[in-house]
Image (cartoon, rainbow, N blue to C red; front, side, top):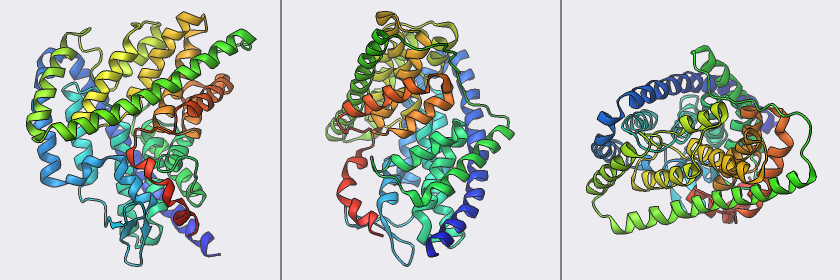
Length: 420
């Protein structure tokens, strides 16, 4: 009875969270599209200032919210922590008090993400909006005096954020349940998180924002040899996702060890990357990568090295401090790799690119159900069985690697979490 009451309370609060995150996602999505258009038109004037934009970003973080640089790893610590009677959170893995989400967290993340995308950083957008959702969930638990449900409301906020930005409510639900601890679902949060995701999706559409989607028409079934080829591709997708997460972890560690002055570091790195971004196919690899995705699914145009170059730029940008997110770049990397494999294997390019997009994303984030449902919602149900097959295989070969560093440390805490 106590749990039912808690779910009911959280479900009502989820409506509010969904409405707020739907409006935020709608604004954020349209702002990114507007900024992307400006950058594409004036990339020769804007991209040279990427290093200077990095200085502003580091200053804002250090001055107003140092913990905000942790990204979704901070949300993982909250989700896997234990809330005491006063609403303070203690993280099991590190046995330390976390307290509350930093004030102005959402505003700072959105400002910095828009700034870095305007000047050409090769980064994503979902990390920012998911972190905003986590912060809104945490704020809601304080406003409605429901701190005992702060973890459920945090999950609800993340679900609403992704449901609103990508308009994939089921995918957003499962990502919010999976991203903190691979293989464990917080069933108590399912109903509130689902409500929040659908409300956010509806509100973001009412705000005039419509996320990209590319339904794949596919009649019939693959031949046995084609299925074997798809399995081989799925293994490759899993290795690409694993390689991305490992390269990102190594790059972050080396950057933090070797670079003491983050201002000089991000300025120098930003200037060097700006030079490459400007002159390499006219800013093709700047921003989230949606231009590459559109080229593949609409025109069938791509370069065989798109996935490798995009991966390299994204890793460098995130490692040096341009932290916007990895999901859209990973979808770009996977789609571009899938297009190449389609040429090599003779598989349909739309099918292979769609499968690659979500399989690489799932392998890099060490999630399984989220990429399957995101793939179905973005690319249609006609290829659902192939999406599921590829995601399962990619998940199996990724070696439990993840772009979220804290995800690897929560397993030792699972007993404490599950026994509550």
